[in-house]
Length: 116
Image (cartoon, rainbow, N blue to C red; front, side, top):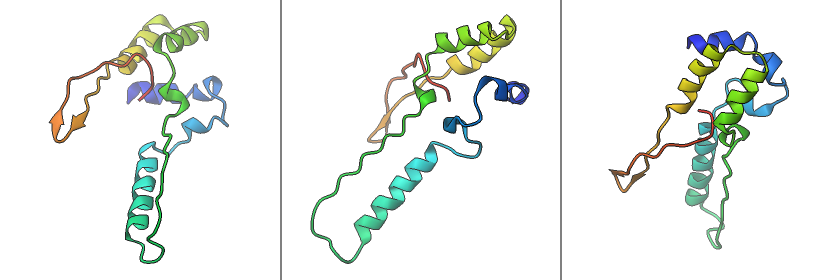
């Protein structure tokens, strides 16, 4: 939280205000809820039950593809202190994921890019 609050003071100088991927108050999980509601409504509609439907969701955002080395280099070139960048990169790079399939947690895997 401390890092986020400190970064808030300079974020306007780093990211343009029209960069829609960083809209305050919007979460990627909003897309999941919207898709769920859409599918639920279509499943329970009473008229026109014939036919098929396909839904394609692309929930990847620009910050899902940002490589960590790029972030580090850009921040250093923008003049951020090495210790500050190292501390921020610890927050970014310590993530791990595992997938739950049929109630069983799979092995952890470590990403090399993306911001959470």
